[in-house]
Length: 530
Image (tube, rainbow, N blue to C red; front, side, top):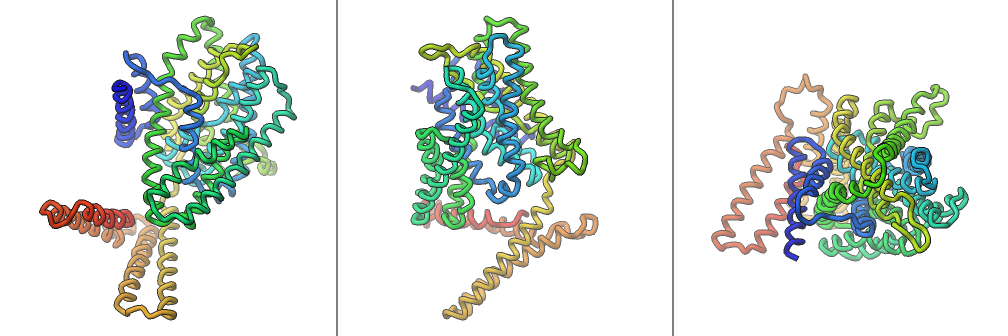
């Protein structure tokens, strides 16, 4: 027991250290964690072994749900053409290409077994892509496509994977059966997610306690996944659907305090679970490599090479070939609004991760009558592909974006936020005037409220003016809004010191101190950047 606790603490320490090192040196935290855990497996002591049930049932649902909460349902709908192309059609194409290549270099391997591996490796991993993408910075429309693809492609891949595995152990593997199974799983998953979102939405409308809200939020991905899995429909799609709907409705469902609390909770969950899955990937090294000792080196290298090549080249060709079409045929492209540089960046964003490994580890070692053919070699092919794409693409994704000049338009995003803040302040002033017409509000109180709203409006207008002024024409070292944020932070820090002094001298209890500090923390969080 003590050894397990010590190992858990070491894992948490590695996750935190990797996050700090990534921020300090600009390296992807997933790559650092995979490297550290791979080295750790070579040392004496306990190791983590990948349990597919734990990963697919306990780890992946909350990570996908968190990603769905922060995604935009409207933006995904606006980019639905590209999202479906990547999350459905490309997944199927990748599974078939990888399956065909493996059959060509692995004599005796059934096509269904090869397609099972291809389906497992077809979807870029949501955890890997979003974790690295958040750090390197992406334009909004490219980020939306990657998020939408990552959220939806697992349902396609796992459905095709299930059908392929069933075919190996005796069920039919024909096109009508695959299409029927996919439609049932997808539509059932979406319906299940909508039902869970509606039920929990009704419950959360009646709860205003932030801690209870966060508890329900943590339980939601499992409430969506488990019934869907029990009904043999897509649990992944149920989780994503529930997350997208509830995230879209958060304004109506949650109070401001509940949103702040839930955001902090999910950031912690993301940090720990993302770190855990990357540690698991690295720790499988010592379990997989010895298992291929019975195969010749040529067979191992050929199988690993065609698997990796099939995964990378299929994605690249799928995205880049439409660019070569004549202009009059460009409308046939599923992503005509993306530039060639953005498509090249998108083709290099397909890191594979723990979902692929968990699916391949779930391949049955044997059944009552059938032993899954060449399972150990398929495991090695999957692990080598995950390792190469995660480390190789993860380390080079940021430099590639910089070389291509594909960066987010930060100025435009800030301009939109400044305009939105101005409009929101004006809406608040209109609401105040309307209230004054219908109920008596003391002039002093109305004046305070009016000045606060007008001050927020003026700060937003100052930011907008600064953003619209060319850099070479700006003469002020900082805008009035930046000055306001900097000075108010200094004031808040002095107020915190005074509250601390009151507590230390016994004039204020710890409970009251935490309450007053929470008020200051929320105000500081709402300040403009200094």
